[in-house]
Image (cartoon, rainbow, N blue to C red; front, top):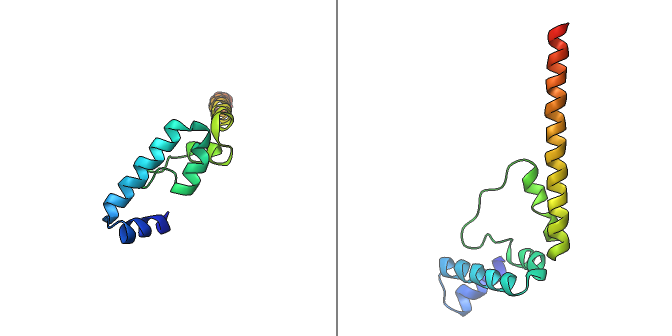
Amino acid sequence: MTELMNKLTSEAGLSADQAAKTIAVIKQFVTEKFPMLAGAVDNVLGGGQAAAPAAPAAGADSWLDKISDVVPGELGEKIEDFARQAADKAEDLLEKGKDKFNELEGKL
């Protein structure tokens, strides 16, 4: 994306901020019109961080959100949803296990 930013600033005469906003608008437009290309657009244009970098997601969400970058389109989103549900279920089971452990520890 740096190369595109440089081209927009040098060849189109845009400021760095204008170039970043331009890239963000183009990315949004393309992903709205062609959702199946969302992962590819993210890979090419930096994952939507052209205009304002978003804070990285904490914990499991950080890698779960990247699944659709590897598997673009609806299939990637379905895999992300499945992985999130599995992660939530695992977290619930872990909490139940901790509760049981604490309960048993209290009896000893």
